[in-house]
Image (cartoon, rainbow, N blue to C red; front, side, top):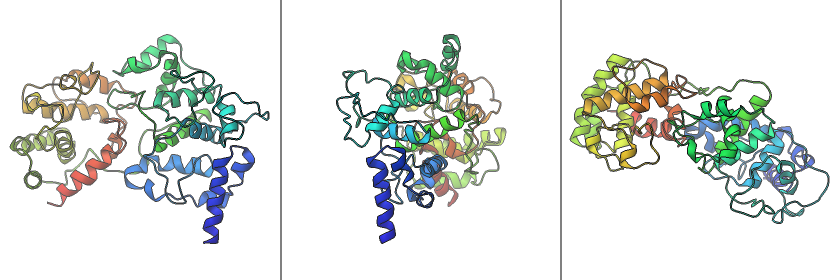
Length: 394
């Protein structure tokens, strides 16, 4: 009990001060003890980054074994991470820059250390930092790329790097060079042709972003491949067609979903892509063929594939296919772009967007679909746990 109280006191000390002395007071032994129980399974993609930053004293959990990866991160919290992870020097002077970050505030020295790197808050007076406001993806990227003093690409290269993303118009134009650099160096990865610049950053995403930037600053290569084997997308099927249909029936699937299983196993044999993986994904995307979302049955879109120029999530933002088989073939072709495999027959418009992404051909496991096929990092983990594993039990 005494040891635990000492540990928690050390963590609190780090939070209430951004000085290097306070940060270094968290001993190497204590840092090594930062094992978070909520970073396994769904959040294993962030485990390495969190571990590295925790060892540096740049990030800590809400208690000794809980990291709370889904929680959003504030501007002042991200400032603290940057200062500690990148070894930035806080100014010695106590002169206050922002009205809402006085010298008595725990984040004062961190905010002062990163003020030249952080973007100004567009909808607020320049005298305010808004320390408790949540951070967007584009703000975080701008800050971290500026902090490592990266040489950003010229306008022509910037446009070329951002062109594959259909939501490029959502990026603050003044941030474009920094975002383009992050895309080129794999600090930032999009999801199915979207960068989601205005989306709120989570604690897990913040750790991964800073960790990748740290690697780039130190001249090391960033790999988007999972360090664990994961659930392979290509290979021998572990589920028979009959078992898949029994599973679908047990889930109360629509008849259209049950009957389309034949096509999934047919194209699985043609491509070498495990049919149960894509069939499970189709179950998630269409609610077992009931199409309770914005995609409608007549679109024959089994995978929620967007159009090339999609601007939202409306029905018209999704591809339409002439038949159930064309929709299944498009699903396999779209996944082929992620895997670096050749498509079958004519491709749909969105295929070119996926095939030209910086990470195209780097995906090999279902878990890696999170953050690529869909913005939610847990997307692939959900498919494995809620759909594939129950199907394998039939």
